[in-house]
Length: 116
Length: 109
Image (tube, rainbow over all chains, first blue to last red; front, side, top):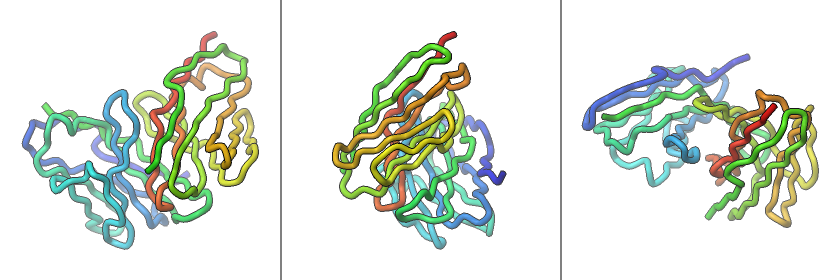
């Protein structure tokens, strides 16, 4: 069964450093997302991406964050200058379509980001 | 805006039935999802309801009442592996998912 993959599984970085989290969505999917989950808290939407541009972003997704689809398969989330509060599990997700219907989002296994 | 409420924790015994409730307030409604999340892992899709009524899928069923803003997930013949968090989520603007805090279910032998 096709799946979303993410690398690395765990990233440790120092405050102020840049990190890039990588995702490979399911190949025929057109809609891509990043979510994060701080330990013990709920899953929160960060950004959605379609047709090579951001379709929606949350308040969390400030100027320190950016997303890119550099080629036909990868989808990346960059945090320019990490803060302690960026420590969380970051999930990439993709879906075939959006709109009314059972267009479930498939989640990757996540990248655990630890900022020290 | 969106608001989703679920109980924080529930416990149940192996072989039993458990019902996990979710109430929601949304501006517009495009269905409701249930996801399962084991500790440290990604959410995995369980069910989607957009019409009122019960959808059955093996040991798991999901119910929706749009007029009451209410859904529940019913798990039958509980197994130890069902110990996980169960996340209620609604799509907003047909796109992003808004998640509840999740209900952590512990199944005991």
